[in-house]
Length: 281
Image (cartoon, rainbow, N blue to C red):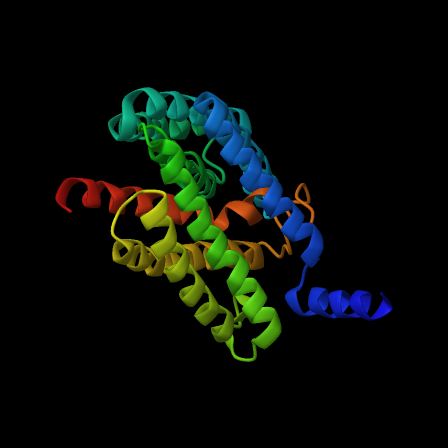
């Protein structure tokens, strides 16, 4: 038992976070997502809203450390509008709601005066696009009749990328992928992500979406790049803000944004890919 504990501690040190709680949280989140879509899809909408609001709270707190003001209430209201518009109007509703929300948020910042306006306006625009807009594509994946299969395929692809990249990196990682941005990421872990996400894509597309396995393999490769890019973008934000994690709400992960990093960039890419497949293949 002591040997297992020592091995676990060694893995935790190398990975930079606790392995067992991380796996437990990941499995719990997957179960919650599946249950929400399997029994009533509106519950999934509520989950997305909660995740976005918690993410906004984290990023507002993070930007406050560098004296950049972002209006949390205004962004929460805008997020709720985007969610409703997306769920009821699809991609057109998401686009129109985003286009309307951005100028309103900028006008709202005028109440603070000109000092720091450019910083606040830039940060506010970033948060609007990064969180509620990109998260809106999760809702677009869930809207069709086969929304459960689409979202679970998405979950499988992102989980394969994150989990096996993490495990292979911890066990075999020696060559840093982006040492100045995310020192724990390695080329070996990246190779593990490619291998297992391609396999996960082929299997999920065949058995869940009933599409050609090779389409899933190709899109699995795409997800490796979008998910890894999302992870690196969030890591760059944290390093610029001198933070280890965006929060502490999820044991073994950190904050909500630390869990959403690979999700946010992958959702629009997979939604677009599935739309192209549906129309032309």
